[in-house]
Image (tube, rainbow, N blue to C red):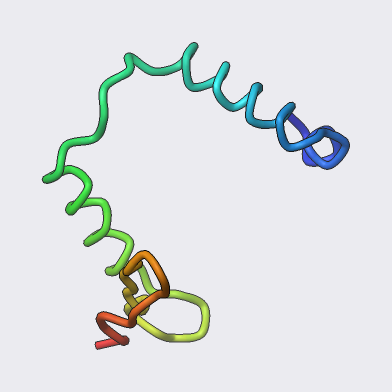
Amino acid sequence: MAPQEVDRQSFWQFLAAWNGYVAANSDGSKISESDAQALFDWIDDVPVANGLKHFPRYAWSGERLKLLAQQA
């Protein structure tokens, strides 16, 4: 969908389209823990525009975000 189409949709219309896309284009399996960690490591290794090499990491405690690690 074009960004203009998404802008005109309600939230539930977007979620319905998203769920349809996922159902049509996936086999229903989840990413493995090792693949997820490899993805996060790859994201951390990509330099960002302002020169920082690593993104800050946060954890959700159920009440607030806690900073786990800053840039290296």
